[in-house]
Image 1: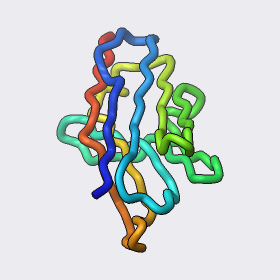
Image 2: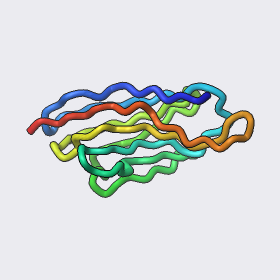
Image 3: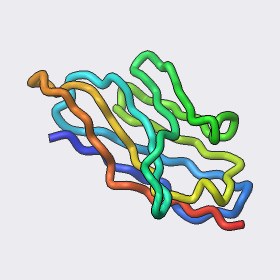
Image 4: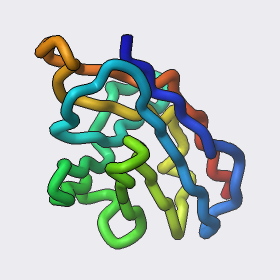
Amino acid sequence: QVQLVESGGGLVQAGGSLRLSCAASGSIFTINAMGWYRQAPGKQRDLVATITSSGSTNYADSVKGRFTISRDNAKNTVYLQMNSLKPEDTADYYCNLNGYSILGVYLQVWGQGSQVTVSS
């Protein structure tokens, strides 16, 4: 059983900052990539940022230059530093992991979601 536990969401004014954390635990053999996705009410879940085990990153155009994804491989934890937040960043943010378990089973795991609300 692999579990992702998120923390760090909340309410912030436009222009402010928040930091999300996501810690993975369980029978993980290897992690290919971890990332963050977000889903606003009535909309589909979209990619925000991903980071591979080697540190390669990918960002949605809408967050480039404002958000930074980072990872602590020793702790199986991924972070999302969100600066210059805008009201349109308001959404539920979901952590994602893909990799393999110690039994060789492919893993695609989601966190429970963290609500981020940016007031204007």
